[in-house]
Image 1 (tube, helix red, strand yellow):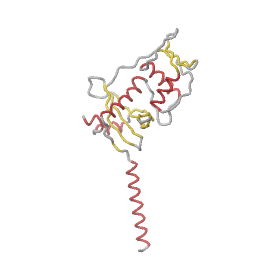
Image 2: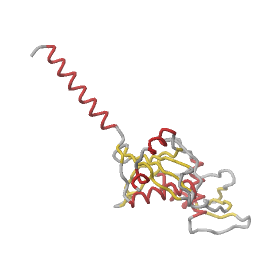
Image 3: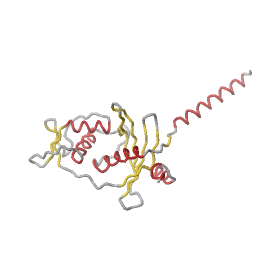
Image 4: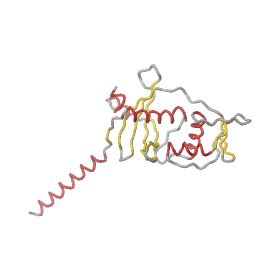
Length: 208
């Protein structure tokens, strides 16, 4: 076998490996089941409507935002509602810790944030009400890695055919005992490229 032939074979093998590696790195579209769609819709609903979460990029979620999320979640959904003399709810810090760990898989460094006061291992905050519920459809779901997904959602006012908002988030599937759940890694508006992709038809909305 000549040196030229060996070199050609090596280059061909490297090229094939590169193609396979590139294919393996491409996100894979996933058709969500009804149960998975319901779980993801609930996640979007909690972040946007219940907790008024600000958008954040991966590895850029600040502790203050986690505190605000945990307090708003418990004010709107939690069972613990005791009002103090100033008209605030007194919320044990452990409640905030629990919900932040549930949705983001992170701990919390406790302190006051704006009008949310931290006193004696509890938060004091004025009451809040969640906004009106939207109809949410999962328009795109991609598997990025073994347990990492990117999911896109369209928000509709009830009775309207066109969405007024599109958002996306990265979520990671984690195990909790024998059950699994998603934790949020990134939360953003959908880009123009995302919107054009979804108009071609994919995900839950396209399946209808």
